[in-house]
Length: 628
Figure: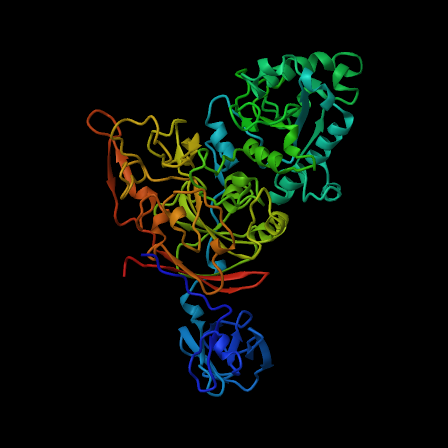
């Protein structure tokens, strides 16, 4: 069964003056004087290196007295006794127990880690994953989501590494909503998309769409753009319902140039730019068109009056002279919620860059626990999202090491623990480690909450399991490809029972694990990325509920993690095997109906959080050496 976490924070022991443990006082004992020894080691140093001098700095020892049915500090204790004296040299490596005593109260114990640093590698000993490759002509090309778009037919993404993206925002109204088409509402849209952080703070919002992506990408992507005057749809909302943003794309494509050629550019206004301006990278496709439509959103009974992104808005071929709409976003003015709320628009713009949804479409479970911009419109983008966009490159740690990480949101530092035969790109299977908490863009959501969800308002280590191995086809039935340069998509399906569970051949052996102890014998829930929580929840473990995570999901000082320790239930294999341990192969008919399992492909990492502060976290990574 699941092994409980060890922790060393806020521990106190009760004792009578004779040294015997006591229960909480009752009515019968309220007249007796009862004391206990209370010790707080939250700020005590617990990480030392072999040869260091021991220190008790930060320890708080006090005597508590029970008065009026509550514990009250009687006095601080300075003449306590420690089993290891201040200044003693620490020569024994490993976990060492420190015992603190005072008079005849029950002694208190806590654990320190003494590391022989010569046995471990550190940050400087490891290289980073790949984010570029050389094409056949020797040109350096990026490895990010655009590589998938380039290998697909008739789709385009907003370039995540361009500082010259031009976004066209179209306030789009229907005849029955003419009262929405005011200059005041247009200015609201303009502020939400292109306002500075200072502009947004006036409306108690943390960022605009533009300022969010400049900060989240660490300046690697920048877009400007324009908000057109309100454009009346050429067709009514009832006619538009069938095709939504697709119909609007063709509408604006056909009308923009004709209006631009009119005096003062017609309904576009005298400040309108040439249509070709919005093709910043000159690939024959408009970088991004954002339609903010007048009709209120409806989440039930329609997909058209909600928010979505498409990368194939028109089937027209790219044209340098008259760029065609490909990537569009479609969302209601109502998503501003009357208070300049940018969250939905930030989320959909993430899709424009090539990110997918991380939440479950049928609401059955929550792989990321809601805490991700591509899950619940929440916080900053996570380390996987930024890795896949080329904004962040993790350090690949494949040996035992002592690693220091600063907060990911502000430092861009993360660690990747690779699977066997790792191809050194985001298109593979691995674990990602990031120091998360109320830092950077996440601060507002994590501290104040959003949409009924509270974030990680206390810092800790977030561990993600990622499986984004590449595939060639869009229906996710073929085996995963070894060569990321051939990928046109990656394996993902965050819905319960996951990838390839629908419309698959009878008896198909997929490239991940089928259910264990599942009476329906359906595939186990499969996700592109999953937060591996520090605390166990039986519903989340069995994928029975849409569990939202909180601070308890982060690993904090003194806690440990290993897939040999109970967390295997969070893997599709339900055992200590990477997904890629299962390899499908064709039968005599050329069908992928059989597979083999490499039982040696185990996940051999264990992790312990040694030290934490607001500035950094220190973790110990141990990897089993199978050659010993």
